Image (cartoon, rainbow, N blue to C red; front, top):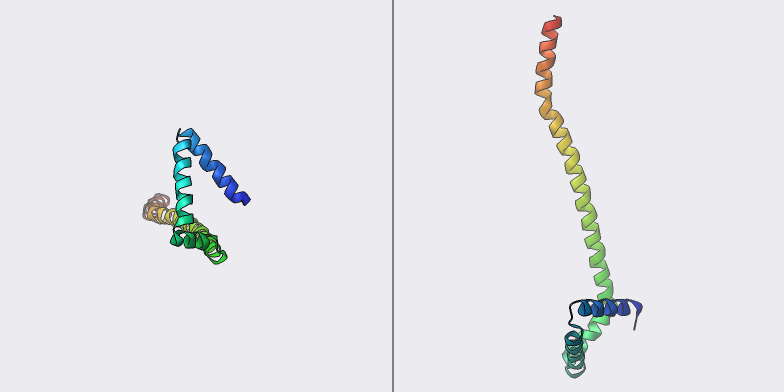
Length: 107
């Protein structure tokens, strides 16, 4: 069993124990493993899930998701910058009016 699979199995077991369902989940997993052995299509699914091309596609999708998250964060940062600029521009008419009043006073 690969390290990642062991880590996942331990985490699943711990979660089942915390929920008080370790025995029931163990039975369900055992039934599923039996079905995988007995039903050819499930065996094919297992082989597909273990295939390198599929793992590579999953990695590509994960990388694409991370890229989308980075782009979204960058867009959010830019939106905040633009909002600061818009707020400054909204203040300009009032500042212009105050400068005109000051110019009249200094006249």
